[in-house]
Length: 287
Image 1: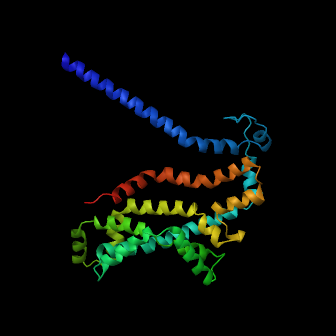
Image 2: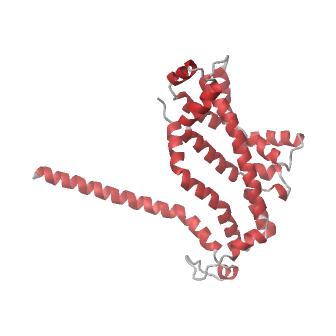
Image 3: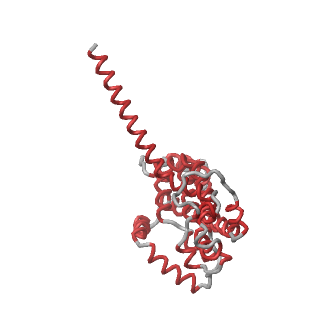
């Protein structure tokens, strides 16, 4: 009887602990999601209804999609989207080629000074990005690539962190697989694409998604290297929309443009969030 009482008390404490935990998580989720809700709500309010609210309303009885129509008809949002897609796809594809071969070289190939070179690579992560931006700006300007897609893309086609992350995954693959492949006459290139990349798929997918998000949200470099509206991305195009499109006062139309820009990344994360978590956790595990 005493044992049953202790067990019931333990279950009660566990239940209370779970209730408190889920309550706190729910409150935190509401806090995190509220800005997105407010952005979406503001985007479906008319200009007159939004400005007529002396006290902000947390719902609307007369939603409108006119703000979304204006986002594509009043300003060049479609062009900004196209530019961003071109920039994101090209940059991500080129970067994957660079980091895959670099990670393979550091993980599997033996050459003089490999550890020293890799240590120098890692030391680059300690350099402030602002210093790199200045150097890149001078280089791209001297090459005459301002207001071009190549000027936007080239400084972002490699990443020391992603090379390190992929190298760690490649090193976790047993050497026995490589030796067996060499016995079968498999070339290093074929082994890379047929064995190593499929095994490291979660990390590869994670890197691709993180790079896509990074490119989509890129602001400082595109704003610095382009002053031609024909090459604006959605991140810096939104400032142009605010200044010369809807105006500073038309908040609902601005929110509609921001919603349209944010939706692709939200969908991407919701679809691949499990692979992102699996890739990051795998990258931080040895053995």
